Image: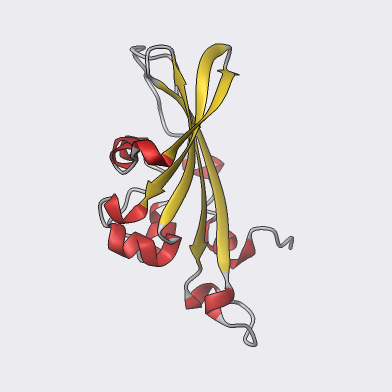
Length: 152
């Protein structure tokens, strides 16, 4: 995600960083929230909300607005204690000129649509997480920016 952010001129943003959820919530007002209703997430009772984040209120919002537009649609699921159990962000990012592979197309018409779903659980549990070995991971950023739906 850092590589995508750098290529999208969002290099100062923490796209996909769960810690930024707090920054997103600060850009939400009561008018931006629609209660959808109860749902279970991983067996836990939650309430689902549709929210609209004013991108200009986020850190680096002016730059983000150029790539994402004025608002960022998001859905959140909160448990009975008000803890975030799930978050879904749907965004359309304008692709940079370098992502345009076809010479006859204009870069301004290229867009990258992404949906990110994050689930949060096991609050307060100690974790000993280790990154997988390098040979088990692949950087798919360039392929995604060229059009992740293309098969080769």
